[in-house]
Length: 622
Image: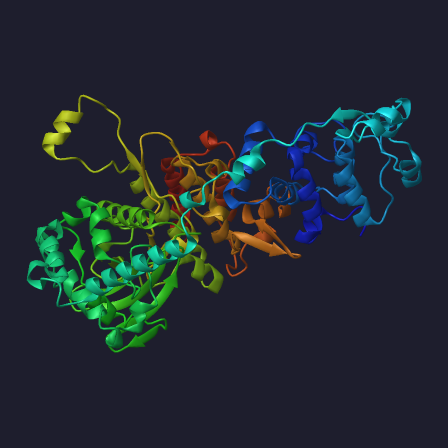
């Protein structure tokens, strides 16, 4: 391996040992301040400030990776001139982390770098011969002592200690004699103990038989389980919701699933989370306990029957097919759930997101239902031409479902990959998506009831607005006419100003820098939208794979453009671009590191309208 090999071109395992060394005593903290911003400049300027260091540190904790690994990933893929093994070697020597420097030397097949003559980093000479022959300190001390051999021989109770001294031994204690005086009558006989144990075992056995005997229980005094469940459901507010679908009591669902021989395998293989029964069916009592009452009382929402949705999707078929009645089957998957399509006799084609029992890595039932509640409430409140329309939900089956209108043009992500979009269609998608975000960013939190509102008006004058939280091309659906519809509002938030969370929120390839540390504002959406703009003009994926490495599209475009000119990077499906350069400049402003320097969504919408108008005038002339 050569000294000039770039870090980014090394296999991940190659730097593993170095990363492990730098984790000891957090030695990575010594090298980060020594990394130069410009490797070719004679004037040293630090590449990473304190905020950036904390961002990487938090990201390492969230992803459970070593900090040095995150540092190597970021440092190794940024800048026009990228660091090499030689760069790393020099910085490690400067930081006096010679153990890591020795590892780099081993990788490149060179002798270990010289160490200081003295100090903590000085080399330690180890001569085994000297260690063996060298007289120990203890031996030298013993040789200086004189031992009175007469005293040793004449004292029967004296003991010679290891250092050559003597100590008078005391007579044996009376413990032995005492133990001999213990009366054996006071010690239980082992056979008696075994007899007691046998009697206890019989009593336990009789108790088990009693509990299993039907004849010994007064069954008329024990209420039936189904009666208890039915009574509980009758008192549940959900029974008062007016819907277009018949409501199925939980007792009937449980009684059906108890028939193990007739249970549908599609529900057995779909355990939701802690709270599902032995058949894999989640206890609906758990759902009703944490479903948001605002959803149950929302008259705009339809409470669909799960069995009806199951029938519409051909038992949530994993294969997508076009039938005489319309499309049926699975159309997509995400971290939160799988999406299926089916045709309803009244509402038409439905997109049904069936919630899975985990999100990202894993989470408990409360977290799943929190995301479910957020998506349903947000979609119900946020109704706009560029937001996917919601019909309702289902909570009476194995897993909750969000039911929306089926958007028949696929996702923007799929359309970009298919290389079928014209420039005009792309500009329309940019503009429509921005208008949808503008509506979201200006939408206030739903008003409380008049009584509660009057009580709280005097307490605060702040207004709470929305942000989407996960803007990306996969969450922008298109009609056949390329009208964009924002979807997937499971991470939507209502903010007064800034939200600080304990974890990242969104998709990492689209995430704003501050998002990695849990700082959430509407400017996070602006940054994510900037990534979408780059996708639309370049046709590239958000993570570009080149020469065996993965680079974020933002960095890739910056590093491969010439003085800001991205002509060579434009999607060649469009024969002649007219607005690409201006879109790129707008994207750059959206992708600024400092969130306060990013434009508002109003500015973005106005800029796109100005780009769209000349384009439409040109089309009209043609």
